[in-house]
Length: 447
Ligand code: GUN
Ligand code: FE
View 1 (spheres, rainbow, N blue to C red):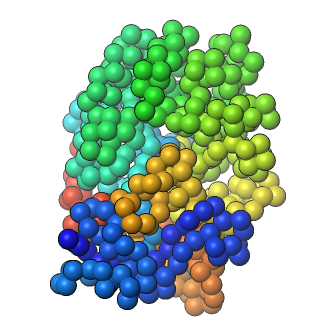
View 2: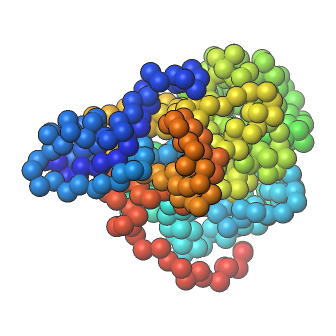
View 3: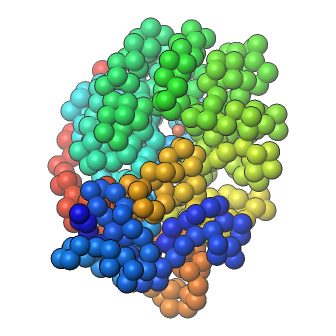
């Protein structure tokens, strides 16, 4: 039984574009449609063809002239940092100590965690992001809040409790045993419940002792179906500190390699200052380097070298990294990605940007059968984008003459105002969304 016929200018990628003229990398239907049945996509194609397959009387959501795309995917961000975006003046280690390790202490209180989790997931949806990979705080309650908010909205989300047992305030430290036990319990409670996936999350080498890294190894070995997320080579002081803590390792990447943490399900935030040797290790293990352009600019961390990743055959994805990242919008993120690559003489075509936010990120998560493209059998996670959402965009679009140009306008000038609707498993979330609470509670006292 068909539930909904979504009509619009349908765009979906079938492979990575090889440049701005690569029209074979995507399918585009100027008058297209997506037929949704029981939360899944039943058919995609020209409106006339798809409409014939629908049951009589099926409701039609007519989004013409807007673009209909797969829901956007964000492969790295921090849900407890939602209220710490725009914290002034510091690079990574000082920023963590001054702002983030204070902010994350608030998540000991389940009511605060629940409040932020709701606002966080709504903010993702407002920006057209239907799947995200998130760090929670060290508190198991924050993971419960995160997955509860995702489940209420039926979103495919990936997340996990941060593990930290040194170089952080007492109130944010677990122990190797507690980190292990709490992670095991959370995996049992959440992994593959509905659309949830768990990510084992040692924060980074600086905040885990060798004993906790051993425990992380055990967790990863015991749960090969879970993701692994951590940070790698973001900032020069971080690299010097991390490698000083593990003097036996060849380099920063080797720390994670020695503890068995590198594999196809591993997401490594930043990867800015890596040697060829380190990128080759990522290529051999299948681990994914996560490019976070707004964060890397905001913290003054450096420029991600995408071409070297491609040359050495290593996988990469793209992400906001909120709250070092300055926007929840994947459109704004790709606008900044373009500039970061441009500064290095590298080019990012708008086709590649839209591929990266959708199918590219789905492939980085090995979830391309479910999300990231519009095909029969996939989950009906869909975003609708208006290329004329702001007066300046409308004016610019008056002289745009190709799809690629329109996409470039969207990534350069667009943000949440361009998102006119988002569907999660076939359900419209803008019109039928969980009510956004505007009554901001007073900041809770930290412990
Ligand atoms: N490295 C370790 N923790 C963090 C974090 O919360 N944000 C960023 N950008 N880098 C980190
Ligand atoms: Fe991060």
